[in-house]
Length: 48
Image (tube, rainbow, N blue to C red):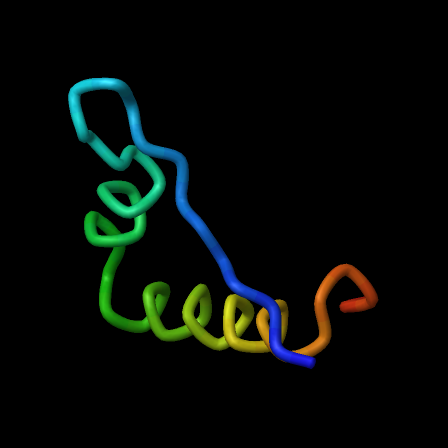
């Protein structure tokens, strides 16, 4: 089962989490996206 990740949006349509991710350096973005992919695949059972 694949989980869906939804980012918080404010009432005026801003997405602060997405904005934060976009502000990171490319290497950091890649790490975050890798972790989000794991979370999508495994859900809350992800462990370090």
